[in-house]
Image (cartoon, rainbow over the protein chains, first blue to last red):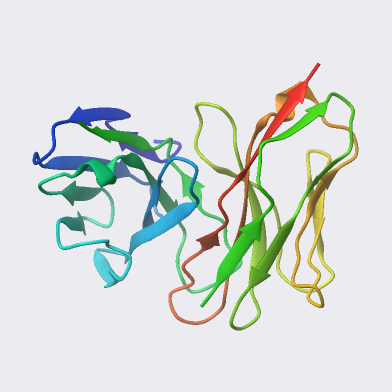
Length: 116
Length: 113
């Protein structure tokens, strides 16, 4: 597609359930980033991919969070046994690569997760 | 580590007023600096950027100058419009390593007619 696509746009789940959030980046973008935005907070880095590899997983808040990317394209962020503090907007972004610090990121519209 | 500090919002202005949103940063190395904007119901998009000291980024009437001596990148616009109402994020990327961008908290701007 023309831009970064995320699904679902809105997800309401019960505490303890697992959720999967999907990101479809811009074609040809080798770098992919996941951020979390809690209400009134900034963007919290979670994980990034260069190709299908995730060199830096340091932002994942707990072992309940995992992410994968296949075919240097679609990425899935999985949250197991969701907790109320996981409620946030999860943003995905892609860029041409990570070998420069001057390039911009292209963001999706986000997936809003509400854990009851 | 890297960090970005933005002024608290919301900033509420009347149409045609002058806008300043302050942004200061702490970074290792020599960062590139960015302003992103998020309009209601949309994803973040790049507004402007500057990659070296004294560079001025500009777009859609907005400007920001990279000030290394004060580690700042304040966003300005001479005359805001209702359509500028959005959330503005200051960000940086440092060279080396994984170039992971660091974002500020965002500043909400509300412009009244």
